[in-house]
Length: 313
Image (cartoon, rainbow, N blue to C red; front, side, top):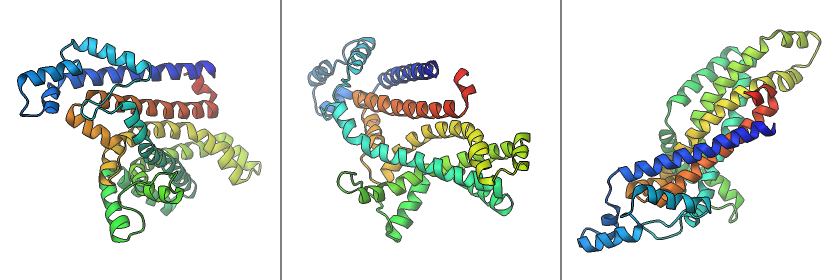
């Protein structure tokens, strides 16, 4: 198990390095005159040149990247070119918002998709067809459209939950939960649809196995059969799909935060990319990719625990 975790951890570190490097190169290839944007359109050429020197933009790109990488390895992600604030402090302030809705979406996806998938496989009939139709519709709906529908009807028209804004957990746990339910649900709809279909298919395959029929013929209760044997064997495939869907949840947070007026990392990334603020965007990328790596590592651990064959894959 230790070598399994070491391999997964090493691949995660390599992934963070490759994606951060590509992001840096692509941002520097856009040709945006950041120094001019910061200095203003009325600034003279000398003032723009001075700003370039101050930001280090007059040095080779490779040298700039090595400086950033050296700082990042020591926990210093630099300062925003536009606000001058430390990137680490900015992300620390924004991260709880994004974590709340993304992990909330992941939790909703896991619970609801398992319930729907198992119910469809075990009950069959009308319930199975309804779940499949709902799953197809849910998979086809983009997260931003779901967010707009929920914000308008549930938040504005019916007034059941806040349509905008975020309350921290420290201020009020109840208000915090209310402020993240709709954004989390908006992100989770697509993941629920995909994962429920996977759970249903895996459960049908497992329930058709000979050993399941043998256990049933020996008088094992349906509850024990489902929880101890069928669901445990079907879970690894569902966890794989859930891990892939989590990447979509992180990407969808950029738009969903905008719809619900949340000041999270997604909206910060949107602003940083538009301004060409390389240090801030690099910090966002590193944090988001690390989050994906950590969650997928935890899902891999769960898979390895459920199915020992995965550890040697």
